[in-house]
Length: 245
Image (cartoon, rainbow, N blue to C red; front, side, top):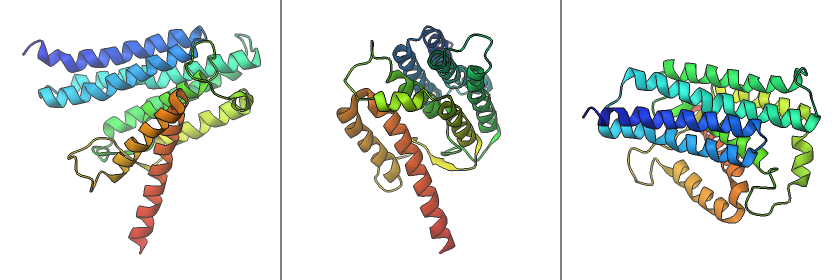
């Protein structure tokens, strides 16, 4: 039992280590491998809570450790990726403050995680955009331009021009910083049963994700995350109109 109780925290530490590796890879302009490290962190983040529930070894320290790990993998890492990318495309030097504004995203991720720990409403769904999708979206978008390592062939030259604009990048930082702390309800992939009723959004997202992965491969990751956000907004608006009626 003494070993078993440490399994969830060990998985959480693997999340943190993956995030730290993503930062190092991003610093060396290896955006594709940095994105893979963040995907690994997301997988570990999904399974540490599941392991704790299955093994009945949840603890207060596990909750705090999870937030600290998430702040590295889903706060610092995406901020680092954007900072290095912006520095690269603008040829900024180390004294130029512009690329460092990307770490505003990291700060809001920390605020998001702190709010999540205190918000008792977010047991089966989310209020505001969770940090893992933001990190994966950021990493996967920039990874599309790592042509030396990415698999598949994509015509992303039109997107490179947009993603190389510092104002677009800073607008991205502002929009997703807000989405993480806003009061917009977002559905969770956690399931209490396997029936269709009650899990419709989850199954639609999973099915669509499989089709997107088959068709777009690596480029499917940002599309899936944007689909998740869009579906959450539609469900929220539809639910609000239903209540008003």
